[in-house]
Image 1 (cartoon, helix red, strand yellow):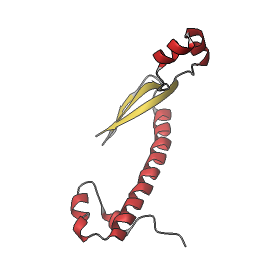
Image 2 (cartoon, one colour):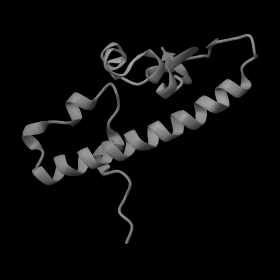
Image 3 (cartoon, one colour):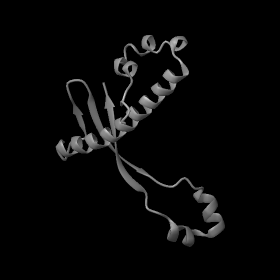
Image 4 (cartoon, one colour):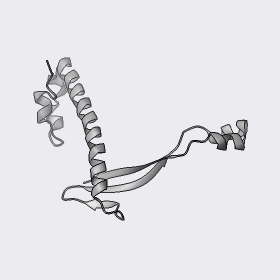
Length: 117
């Protein structure tokens, strides 16, 4: 048997009414547990869909553009890079410059997408 994706309560919650709907004194531990599960599943789905749609948005944008303003939201693409979080100065002191350079991984290049209302 497949469980419903969202509870009846979860399906009625919006950004404008969540405080009213989540009346904690009236919720049982079962309700709270199911709500947490619902929102974690929605969060995971949101991340997956955002990644999918980010690729679609980038593919539709002209090559020389990094900003798009839609009817309700705007997208801003920013190039970024990320590298390891080791103490490079300390490692270089202990292992030497040559060893450090030989074992350095290249930074990870990626593109950040910001969404604003």
